[in-house]
Amino acid sequence: MVIGFINPVLTRAAQLGVAAFQETDPVELWPSHSEEEIEIVIRAVYRQVLGNTYVMDSERLTVAESQLRNGEISVREFVRQVAKSELYYSRFFDSCPRNRAIELNFKHLLGRAPESYEEIIEHTTLLDKGGYETEIDSYIDSEEYQLAFGENQVPYYRGYKTQIGKSTVGFTHILKLLRGAAGSDQANVWRGNWSRLNQSLMTNSPSNMEPLSGAGDVVKPTDVNKLLANVLGLKKAQPAGPAETQTAPKILTEAEKLEQNTTQTWQRQYQAWEEIDPIELWPGRSEAEIETVIRAVYRQVLGNAHVMESERLIVPESQIKRGQITVREFVRQVAKSELYRSRFFDICPRYRSIELNFKHLLGRAPDDYSETFYHSQVLDQGGFEADIDSYIDSDEYQEVFGEDTVPFYRGYKTQTGKKLLGFTNMLVLMPSVSSSDKDNLSGNPSRLNKSIIYNNPLGQAPVTDIQALLDEVLKPKIQPKQALPEAEKKRSEAYQAIQRKCQEQEELLETLQQQLAELRPLASFGESQYSKWQSYSSSTNGGSGFTSIADQIPMAAATVEPDSYEALQQKSEKQTNEIATLQEKIADQRRLAMIAETQLNKWRPRSY
Image 1 (cartoon, rainbow, N blue to C red):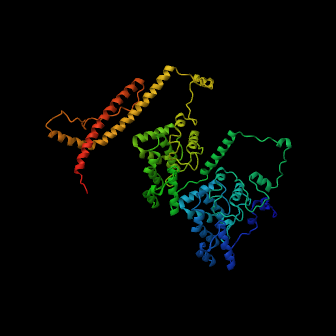
Image 2: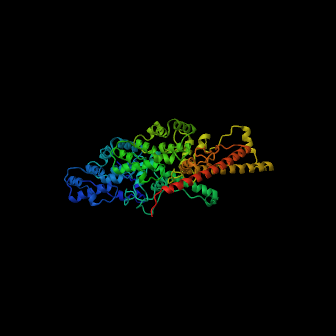
Image 3: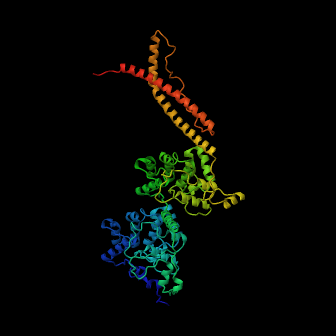
């Protein structure tokens, strides 16, 4: 029987930053325990289950500690109560994305990292169906927990050891979660609280190794192959000769440097969306969780635009807090609100509004012109609210987000069965993480109009005529600019001059009509007084000498622009006559207004 097997990984434990864990024996509560031993067990449970975070005396579970000291519960039940406590919930569930909370549960309660994405999905399903406490029980009541720790042993980190029947990826994953003996799992400003293993688990690949705290300066591997080669003592490859290694560094042009920097910036920006887990409202939610969901809905549906407190929808917020409506219905009310309509419908062209609806409500861009045309018909037939309902009541929304998940951006990922055009269109709609969809200095036109009409990312019409294609390819790069004939040039200048004159006269007509309308009330009273005076006069002049108020006010010419120079000349002459008529009427109305003002001054009370 072999009893002297030496684990090559553990012989290099100091280099991996796990020597402190290897040198610490598991803590177990024996039947004949002393008060000091019980205190050691209690502190070990706090340290393991709470991720090596500091616990104040006021935060300790005094009732559970008393039960453990009196022998009423085992160490496993004490671990269960700590994991179900408000202290654990607030630190590692309430403030964490779902996948991060699950991977921490594996680390704290089973002493290892999740080995595959199937384990993440299994515990996600448990959270959906049974809630938080059912999720905790699934670890502690598992056969794995019973075999590894039993009833009276404190859980400990064991995933950093290579084990029979376990895949190597689990070994690399726990090293990603273990930040040295002095590290803690509490979120900090540098690392944040996002999932550390999400991408590795989804792609079923080992996690990259980062320098571990406490590992010293012996080795700082960043590649799994280098790590294993160093741990197993493999022979390093001989360096190449001088002739093979000395290569001239590539000198980048300014354009290549700009392209390289832009690509790196885009990768960092889209990685931010990749690291954010979807936000969902659970049945046993707290007030803080509901507020997180509400703010996430505002941020998504309103295109990352700032929402003032006075603009928030008080009634729908109250309904979702009381459980009267689901997240989907809250999304519907925000999208139908006057706030959304004023920002993304009233001031936007139709196609821009439709592409923003796709982005805000379905998390993607329209795939082709048929989708845009369909929603344009819905707007014509049913109006704004019917168009909003067409997104939220769709099968796609129900399958992707359901009733209680906040919509999120997903179109920037290539998806099976989806056109690549939708992927490129989404990148056009998402310039960066910090940008918003409100109107900006560049205006708010449609960003995808040409690309979805021509069905290509460049937004260019495909060339179908071979002769036109050859002409386009073979034509000179610089076309000679042909000079216009002198007569045509003069006619063009005259046309532009008469066009400007017509525009100025049209604006003058609008101003005169407004002046005439403002004089009408006072002039009407003056005309009535003048008519009374005329009835008392013995002599008649055949009329008052003033233009009647009831006379029709000449209207400006139609705004349809004529095409020919002669038509513009006729329009200009007509506008000149209308201006002269209006000016005469305004002069008459001003005289009548002066009569009315004189009469009113006699009737007004005077104070001395």
